[in-house]
Image 1 (spheres, rainbow, N blue to C red):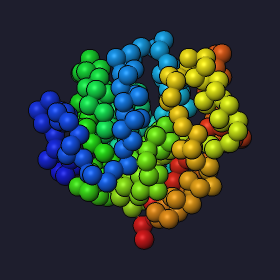
Image 2: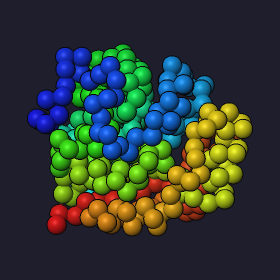
Image 3: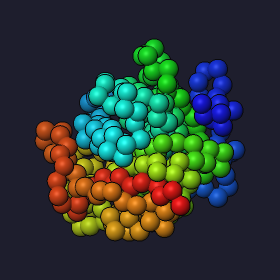
Image 4: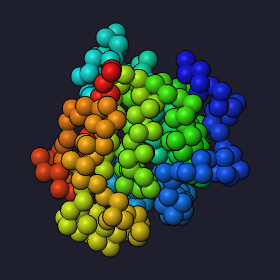
Length: 274
């Protein structure tokens, strides 16, 4: 029952410290990134804002996570063919922001914990979740992954970090801390941006010029190639099951799976038992 997590949970279902001074001094958090996201926190759940692309990404990433967990045979067969196939699974959403992904995963039955380094975004995520009384299996916390992992090792069946790794300071350490939270045979799911000229053109130049993303959302130097990400996962005892390209149509606001990983891609890896 996530006993290690329950030590952190207060009556309001989430921790909201006055500051982030309690976070580790050596942190993966980039404060500039946090401030940039907080500028747009008030409109996080506005379907017409710059976060619209993240909303529509759920049509790909939610089934990707659901099916990946079913395929690895860690879901309870009793629930596999129901509307809540993830019932009984403990899922950590790292860098959850305002809860775009945490909520649908909880509605699929997962016991979801969403963590983010931003006070403002966690407040917004909790306020939105409070509108749906059925989301009693969803908890939010303000925390860095390194502080969280130190007290929650091998607790979760799945860890999700969607559109996060390209915003942290130390990507290798970030992955290491995420994997620490995974049980053996647990799954980690990531979506991110490749480091190519095409990704720079579309994810930065086009997206920010057209107002699809706020100016300054991405730094090209933080983009990561699939083979580099795969190698980092292997260094953390994770075996990659799939790397799949993703394409976003700016005109229709639709995402689709493609074989080409030169812009965006998704990864599913499994932690080995050894």
